[in-house]
Image (cartoon, rainbow, N blue to C red; front, side, top):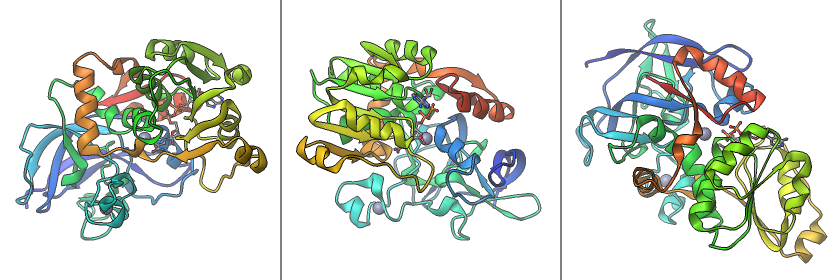
Length: 360
Ligand SMILES: NC(=O)c1ccc[n+]([C@@H]2O[C@H](COP(=O)([O-])OP(=O)(O)OC[C@H]3O[C@@H](n4cnc5c(N)ncnc54)[C@H](O)[C@@H]3O)[C@@H](O)[C@H]2O)c1
Ligand SMILES: [Zn+2]
Ligand SMILES: [Zn+2]
């Protein structure tokens, strides 16, 4: 055993300020990888947890969007070596369950590193007092080091800046994947994206790369709409002007509110497709006019993790960035330290900025 001393932001329950703690990390198991975190993005899905909108266990290092360098590998790990730049996947597909066998690894029923690594076999972190600590979604990217499952660590082009690589781990893959994989947007289709934070801006980039036209961005924040234009939107609308986008071939809800999910249904033309990407607080419901939906032949799809296959999609997206085909830099509003995480959450509640990225 060669335990290392590290630090991470531990979730202590909703409403309680997350706190940076000194922690101890054990060696990687046979098919695990020890990663030194390079950068981690602050995603609204962390904020849902902090604000008590999603029920998650206390005693886990938060963060599920990150990239780092492989520091050590378990004895059964193939295809990775120390120094590789890896993007971490918050669903690490097991490759054996029914969804994995169907080719839908984003729905993996038994992901490697499941249960936030709180079970005794998977728990690798503890407080100096010995108390076990987990890792959110198996990767806990708001920690300076983590042990993750082999399938959670996906090697990408080392020319990818770590801050950009981090965002590929959630927002970018979620947004681009929703457009490409879930909805299969075609060149010439009109696309409306509701909510242009990290996920929505990525959806716009994916739509632009697919040749969608026109692409309409909707947000309540004018500053976000300016970013949307840089991401590839042809037209922008403030929330109260949303109905001007009615008649779209495709609409993407990227906020996580019932009312904007309902709005998305109203904005697509008969035969159009609504893809729901934003996630509400648990238990929220939305409603729609069943008669109209059926008569208009509309489709509503949920998109989990951009229906992405991490081992295929992460390297592909990183390469597109390196070749200058995806303007992912515009997602980074500010580089911060772990100490500024609470400020980043406060800014996100106000809708201020795209992504804040912790740089280690
Ligand atoms: N499906 C998935 O796999 C998946 C993955 C990652 C994130 N998410 C979810 O996607 C959502 C978006 O995440 P994000 O990190 O981009 O969030 P974010 O907070 O960065 O962006 C949300 C955007 O919505 C805008 N907004 C908020 N309320 C609005 C309203 N009433 N009308 C118009 N605009 C409004 C904000 O100004 C902001 O630009 C969250 O619910 C998150 O949990 C889902
Ligand atoms: Zn996320
Ligand atoms: Zn599986």
